[in-house]
Image (cartoon, rainbow, N blue to C red; front, top):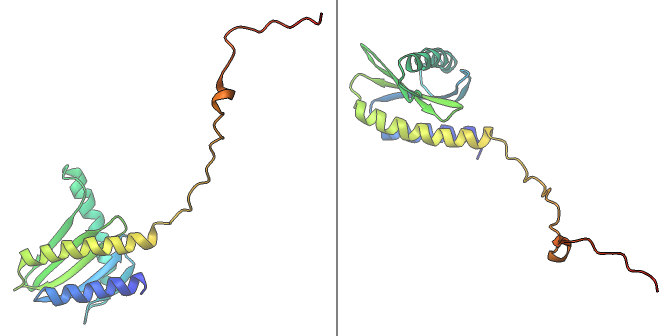
Length: 157
């Protein structure tokens, strides 16, 4: 199974766990869609808006000394848009109607964000081959001994 398929499967499981959730989208922090389950909503537009709002939210958190961004919640008259950090490379954006349990939304959004972050990091983090052992062979104990005084030359008699 590819990372995209695994992320999409996580979005489907999330929608099954959270009643009143109307859409779920995983995107890179650059605004490109990774996977989505957003019926009736243009995923690319939401991903681009997520990236833009993420930039503003990051600056707001930094300017106010609140630390790294964890989540962003927007409440409209017809529901919620919640964005959660999904590792260093991705974000999870959830759409929910106005009757959603916000506590449940946060609980499940944070869990799925962490899972998606792991899936994306596994793909984007290059696996480097082990570095060759560049250590020189250690000298034996006999080679390490140094004379404490010069040895006088022997005369041929």
